[in-house]
Image (cartoon, rainbow, N blue to C red; front, side, top):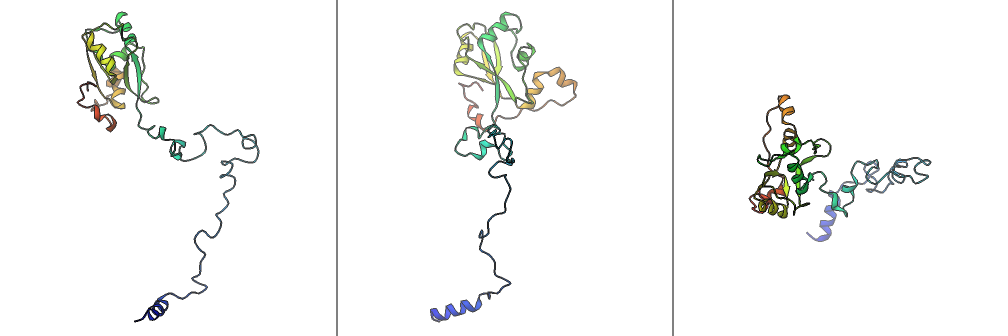
Length: 214
């Protein structure tokens, strides 16, 4: 069979063109008019659009947040998984010990710091995951303590051990932090004691690291 015969056979097998099966090409018709939503962000002619009084960036009437719709600026891509820690300096810790708010002979953890009534963790709104021990007043810290925090730098760990103390970093999820902030109020609710969860993947590199004291 020659190429001409093959072409004729292909034409015979194709469907016939008629008024019933003729359609426009894809996207040949202009899109439907959506009003002023595209150019003026859903606003009318006067008012905010006339005086260019736009809302702040990120508060527009859009379904997708601005930090996800702008791929060139990925600095807020992990905003939903960030963990906020309240800062506690070595100077403040030494001051609380000197004023008798914290007993240095007893283990110090998240509950001990919250019982001083100087710090309040907001789990619901601010999503506080605990305390972070910073190196402010590193030269004036002289107390030997056994403390447990959620994060500490190598300088802070060295300062605690230089004074003869022990420091441990421990991860708590939000439900565990809420229970440890006020243990008495938690037990009055009759809720079972939560089981501690594993840290997120971003913190798994610190597991078993002697420098981080996990």
